[in-house]
Length: 418
Figure 1 (cartoon, rainbow, N blue to C red):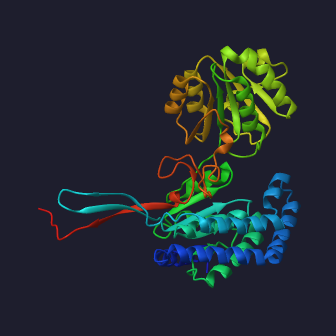
Figure 2 (cartoon, rainbow, N blue to C red):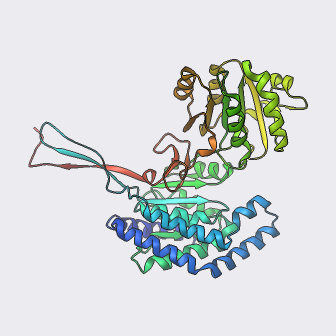
Figure 3 (cartoon, rainbow, N blue to C red):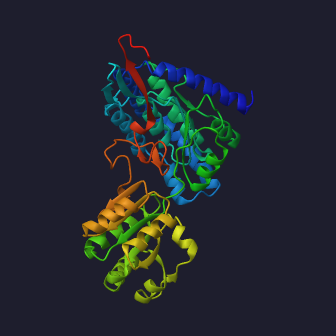
């Protein structure tokens, strides 16, 4: 069989499983998840041995130290994956929730009910823990899932998927509910993205190149974010010490993630006071600054920012800084150069806060807080399948609710249309 026929067969099994999953209740789904967690804890040996193969292969092809760190599965990380499954088991099940209900004048009762999407494809890179996380979230929401991880983690992903399906099967996990694509060929990605009628939604997780490749090939809906060009705007009404603490956290706490600040915007009225001090703190943290002309008047030795810098996702200890004349100019900069991911204002003025919140077109907008909080766990969702900068059907951190859709259920007593 070729890759296309293999993928179509996986799709058929997933569709069949999704139809069975809608009949599985919350208690049974939670029991399956706990059994999967137990099997992961029992499978330290096989998982770590498989992971070692991936690490050795990664070293041979000279993966960066950060990618090798993402790839590595220590004993603690395996236990953390298992704990994550237990946590998902404890979360409230959104399936079957009545979102709203009303009665029409003719007596028809209409319920808007949350239901599974069906079959979800997850395409991801590097991090083998996504295999467990994504499978658990999809199962909790009664969705079948087809997982396609990166070639750098193929042995690890296989071992994790095997442990999960082995553990879940004894508690009634439907066959085909969780499937891992076994080939590392890119042809499998193309086929998965085009399986109209078998796959209902694709979620790519990885770098901008992967997400663009998936989006360009897909014939089924894709929920995504390309990159995180996140901003912090320091208004003239800001508490400047608070602004410094938030800015440092947003840039340096973990610079290689999508919700880290990439551009700092500073009102000209506070630039002379704010920039020299924040410059010292950034320099001591090893941050390279690229500034506009006004910024460079206040900070010596700063590299000149180019037009490209304003839309750059550095994912590193590099920061672009621009001085603006007003909140209006800051908002226009964010809407023009940003990626609609996460943007923050530091301000005490209610009017300026409200203007920023209303006019910045981003999935998450903050007042006096770090953009680093854009995360499903931080939002109290318990878990996260990804972050979306799209506007349909999900936006921002995606938890269990975002893995569902809805349908209308209508109860009548013999009514007919006149």
